[in-house]
Amino acid sequence: QVQLVESGGGLVQPGGSLRLSCAASGSSFSLYSMNWYRQAPGKEREWVAVISSGGGTNYADSVKGRFAISRDNAKNTAYLQMNNLEPEDTAVYYCNARRVIMGRQYDYWGQGTQVTVSS
Image (tube, rainbow, N blue to C red; front, side):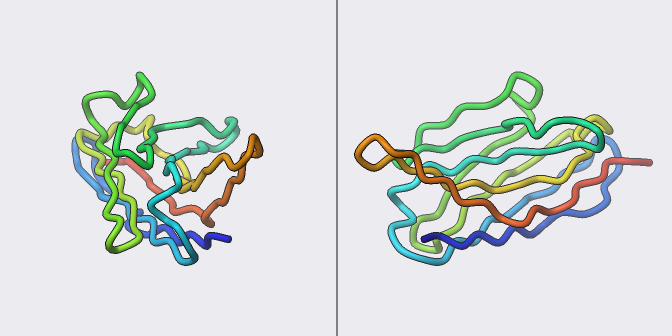
């Protein structure tokens, strides 16, 4: 079991930056890939970024070059650095921990943190 708590959301002007944190409790954090998703009002949840247990990263095209995902296994924490924010980035951001064990996928989710980009 993994419990996830996001923090760092808030209101920011276009062009600004925020860093989201996802603190994990439970065992074996380093074995999980960590994802960030977001959900804007009236839209489906969409995947934003992933960092694997080995440290490899990948991003949605909409955030590539602006967002950076990282992790600190010693602190059981994943981060999403968001730069040059746009109003279209406004959403609730969710942290996800994912692991596949013997062909079965295990997913754990945080409660979400609101990011609002507005002048």
